[in-house]
Image 1 (tube, rainbow, N blue to C red):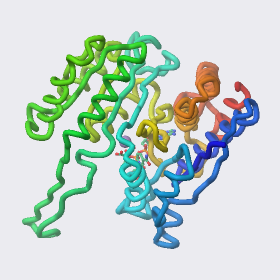
Image 2 (tube, protein in one colour):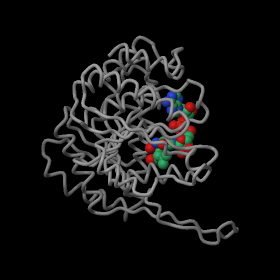
Image 3 (cartoon, rainbow, N blue to C red):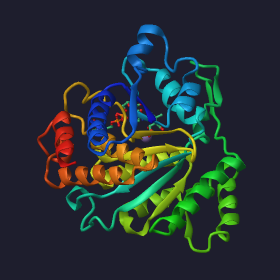
Length: 348
Ligand code: NAD
Ligand code: IPM
Ligand code: MN
C-alpha cells in the first residue's frame, strides 16, 4: 500500500483539492490502485487558532510514512505576513530537498490559447524550475527598518551542487523525452556572480549530452520568445524566481492558472504535487474555482508513482471536459468547481 498525504490548505485550495481527491478516489475504485489517502488540516485556520503552521516532526513523518504529498494552496488575507504559507509550502520544498519543480505548459484546446493561429502542437513544453535555492532561501535582513534610511537585503544563493543537479535533471529529461530541445535561461549579463555560475556550469555540461539540442537565452529574451513562438521550446530550465514568473506566463498561454499543474521532485524520494495557482481569495467559497489544475496535478502524481495508465485516464478525461466546454467561467464555461469534478469523474 502506498500512502498519500493530502494538505488542502487555504481558500480555493480546499475546494479544488476536494475535486482532485474525488477523481483520485474514483480511479482507486475503478482500477483497484493500492493507495491510501490521509488528510492534514495544516493552513491559515489552524495557524490562527493554535499558532502552528508546519507541526514539529511533520517533515520526518512525511518522508518516512508517505510516498507522495498532494497540496492545495496557501495564503490567507488574515495572515498578511504569509508566515504559515512559507513554513508549510517552502518548508516542504526545502525540507524534503525537492530540487525540481516541474511545470508543464500544454495546450489542450486551441481555443484557449490567446496567441493568434496557435494550436495544440505549438504549445507543449515543460518548465523545470530550480526549487531549493536562489532568492527563495530567505537569507537577508532589514537595517534601520521603518526609517527613511532603511536598507533591505535579500541574498541570491546559488551553489555549484544545486545548479549542477537541476541542469543534469534537465539534460536527462530532454534526452529521455520526445522533444530534445533544451533552453537554459538566466540573467548572467547583469548578474555575473550568481548567474555566471549557471552559464559556466551549463557550458561545461553540454558536451556530455550530444543528443540534446541545447541553447541559452537571457530571461528577458525568453519571455518575448515564449509569446512570439512557443513552438520552439520543449524543455526550459531556470532558477527559482524566474521559474515562478515563467510558469504563470506559460499558464496563460494554455488557458490560465486554472489549468496549470506541477510536481516538486527529488527523484527516489517522497515528492510533492500541487497546482501552480494560489489560494485566490477573490474566488474562495463560491464554487467558482477551476479544479482542473488540481486534477491534472493528481495525474502527474500517479505517473510519478508508476500508475501510468491511471495518469492517462485523468489527462484524457480532463481534456474531454475541456473540449466539451464542461468548464468553469475562467475557461468560458458555466459549471461550478464541484460540477467540473463530477464531469471529469464521469469521463473516467
Ligand atoms: P492566485 O494564483 O491565487 O490568483 C491569481 C489570479 O488567478 C486570480 O485572479 C485568481 O482568481 C485566478 N485563479 C487562480 N487559480 C484559479 C483557479 N483554480 N480557477 C480560476 N481562477 C484562478 O495568485 P495571487 O492572487 O497572487 O495570490 C493569492 C494568495 O495565494 C497569496 O496569499 C499568495 O501568496 C498565495 N499563493 C500561493 C501559492 C501556493 O500555495 N502554491 C501559489 C501562488 C500564490
Ligand atoms: C508558486 C507560488 C509560490 C512561489 C509562493 C506562494 C511562495 O507562487 O508555487 O508558484 O513563489 O514559489
Ligand atoms: Mn507562483
